[in-house]
Length: 260
Ligand SMILES: Nc1ncnc2c1ncn2[C@@H]1O[C@H](COP(=O)(O)OP(=O)(O)O)[C@@H](O)[C@H]1O
Ligand SMILES: [Mg+2]
Figure 1 (tube, rainbow, N blue to C red):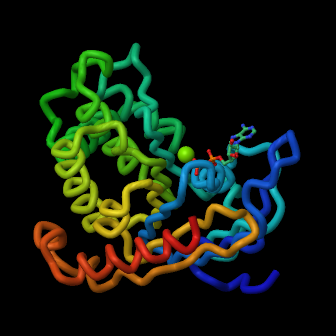
Figure 2: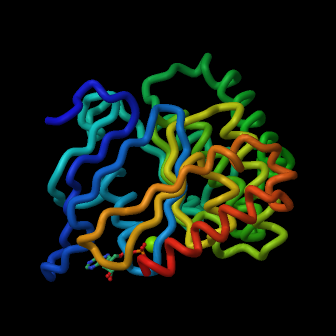
């Protein structure tokens, strides 16, 4: 019980092994401040999804401590939003109902007078991702990029305590991805939820994180934390062309060469 008073997400000595006994995470430590956003990058199989699953409470067991503001993350009042790579939308529900259902599950027991206000909020969240006009459509009638916008709008709409994103844009083409990165970070700036954003894309890691957590290929080694405040503080449109971005890219690639 090292630092119970730490605010934000506190990961202490996290161990995860799957049933076959293979150790996937071997004692990870990490501090993510409240309202902070860190990106996580690591080679395939390094345990990125496992880390998010542990935090989301989707693993049957793990060792170590997961605390948010000093309390176990799996307490009832910690609401965790997870955006997977494959959107995770309910195909038989409209876009609007996908948001509504998630909001009702997150905060149950609101009366019908609440409905109008909720509809207004749903429209706003969809508009923030540029898809207000798709509210009545069904997910499978949408492109991958549009479905992922719905998934991001839904993740913000439930106003989670912690937002976890597992390579949310990796199935999208480069141009679509750039548009979504920009919309995502604008939404985060307006509503800075504590977030961990997993990616296997160095560029995305530098564009979206205040710090970049580089997971090693070997489970016994600690992750390397790279400060990214210089790039993070810039206007999003200017990041890619900047000298800081270029330097950071070199720095991260060097760490990858050493660790992967
Ligand atoms: N449900 C599972 N059962 C057994 N092994 C798993 C399971 N999920 C993942 N693994 C293994 O754990 C390791 C880490 O997987 P994962 O967290 O998905 O990595 P990443 O997301 O970084 O690619 C891999 O070796 C993978 O094969
Ligand atoms: Mg994964």
